Amino acid sequence: CFTRPKIALIGGGQIGGVLAQLSALKELGDVVLFDIVEDMPQGKTLDIAEASRVDGFDACLRGTNDYKDIAGANIVIVTAGLPRKPGMSRDDLLTTNANIIKSVAENIKKYAPDSYVIVISNPLDAMVTLMQKITGFPAERVIGQAGVLDSSRFASFIAWELGVSVKDVNAMVLGGHGDTMVPLVRYANVNGCPVMELLEKKYNDKAKAKEVMVAMVERTKQAGGEVVKLLKTGSAFYSPASSAIQMAEAILKDEKRVLPVCALLKGEYSIDNLYVGVPVVLGKNGVEKIIELDLDAEEQALMDNSVNAVKDLVEAMTRLGFL
Ligand code: A3D
Image 1 (cartoon, rainbow, N blue to C red):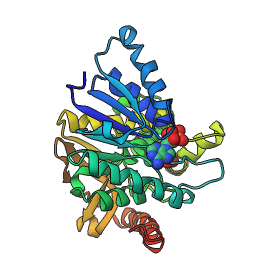
Image 2: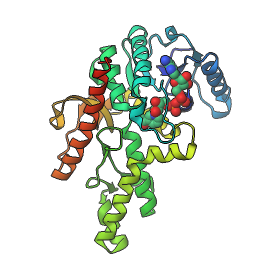
Image 3: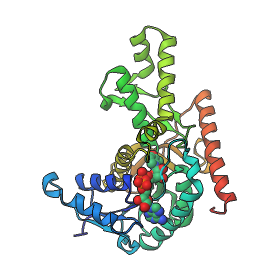
Image 4: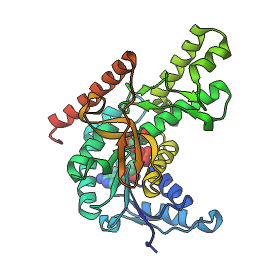
């Protein structure tokens, strides 16, 4: 046991549990699930492992309350922290989750110094920034999951609206993981056919097509809140887990996937030293390339607005003494 690539999951709550199950089902490696709640991660991993015969996977799973068990991890996925309650914004979680991420980052640095880290805890862009600062790992190895999920939500709404397979929809969301995120309408397509053109054909009315797109963009921005409102306790967990697993798989299998990832920009998009969601090439070296799309004036203005929201969060963390 524990001879395969090692995936450490910090936080064994709603997302952490699904991450453990998906890692096993996809046979990405052996899994360590860490949480501060005693016995809970041990219970979850035992439960998942006992389905291995039925699901037909070979993977070792261990639940733990001891950071020593993450030693040698290739990938660490972090979900430690509180989720939103109805009426809360992601930013309301800042102080509580920054304290948690600080301790998590110190332990990752100590026990898994060669790992690649994917952060999911909110407010996402701020928590990734803090993780990189405290671990001191190269920025290519510390990234955040948000864009894969936001893009998947946008793609789902487009597929449902057009009555086409979601597999054929390519849609991307850039910027920070908050209300200012930027779904890129101009680049959205169904196997190469521009979505706006398909909407105009469907409604035979340019104004109506635009109205429908605006509604989908708005729904994408509010999609996390829509789930929070329905669940009443906690936030989305299946889709964030699937999204982070896609990123982990890209790194572990050196897939060179082009995915929207929260990555540290060093001048790209004219943004310096800030974590923001942009398309990157993800492979065995983590972020191997940042792809700079040409944005038109309207898209650039939306991106600037989103970047300013992330800057506000980073400044708040600096004021609070975290950075
Ligand atoms: P939840 O089910 O509450 O799990 C969080 C776990 O973290 C709990 O089991 C806690 O015991 C554990 N925890 C608390 N403090 C520590 C600590 N110091 N060390 C280790 N573990 C600790 O939440 P969840 O799994 O639903 O969500 C986790 C995080 O992801 C939250 O911050 C959410 O806001 C965030 N989230 C992000 C997205 C993105 O797309 C970025 C989507 C959905 C949720």
